[in-house]
Image 1: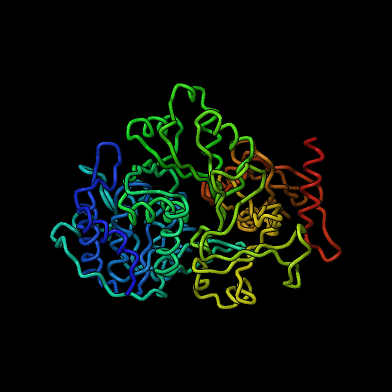
Image 2: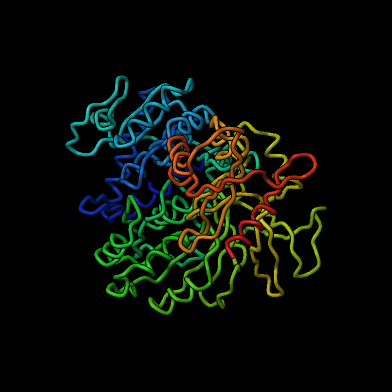
Length: 513
């Protein structure tokens, strides 16, 4: 048997009175957290959830996220974390695609959650997490979590699951633009947390600030699962804001922080940054996008701690490589593979290129997903020859360290969040005034990349850039919609009509100087 919920259960048995989770004044010990997860597991069983069923979570960084996360696992079900910025049509797609039978959502997301739930034919129950003392009326058919768990026992016999059973489905996407679910097993998630804890030298005495969203792979593995495996403490930040992050780091004596490059940028460039002493931090990691060398160097000079850049994908649970504190900081370097993981650089024929030459990064090891849910063809395509093909262009130096040079995919990484151009293009092309649209990423000093839509209007049609941006904002999550629109008479294309995005990017760069 191996169930990812054992991370919590073992720490609860070992030190039940140790503080596990904080959210400002709200505090839960390991015994509290485990008992609450047990009550959720019992409630899910009463709702008819069977082992192997999918349960979706639409929750921010609040204590109910780990409570429900481990409660779902204890019931033998599969967790499907959803981005809290999703609109109702995106929620409906993920519920339908994952075959989720229950949606657990935060009351403040009730409007989009309820609309998405009603669009889904597979999801049968919606459960809402309310704030203490909330008087907000619930929509018809929705059940409040606190009532469902009120009479449930604090003990639950965790359902036996096997190491290769699916624990979590994390949604990602490739060149198709339609999100697809990476099936991560109990062993994938458990062992990646264990290996990451060892590589980062985190201990039970550390306090981790969870500013990364817990629906994100890095937040789950390198903060929640890692800390609960060790019996460490996490303090939650529902929405990243530099001043609040500074205050929590100081107040809770935070020693461990994981973020995306955008978070480090805002911490460094906050007007009152130097008023806060962050030298209590002893471990900082960055993932989700390339970390600029300037940020790494400035952060170390100011705070005395090296930001360790890690690399991985949702398909790799997610950590595959890590930079270590004693290594010289270099642009693009993602370090060496963590224990039990292999990384190679291959040419288009699948063969190793000459030393130092560029190629696609491919990965195999304990961290690699079992496949994309209900997509055997996509799984076979990405897992060619037993290696996960990342779609990232990189190289290896003489010391065995790996570097990311570029991406083979067109994915835009905005503030550490993947944005898929085709999904935005489909929305834009649904507008009656637009004939063609191409979406690309352009450099941004804080976010890494910003979203630019280049559009061609239909003959005799007119629409403003502001109207198009608002049109997209109504149909896409906040991190997805384009912030700027460029109008053109035509887009660069091949003779077969395929838009040449690399040429488009070059044109935009040339205009920008």
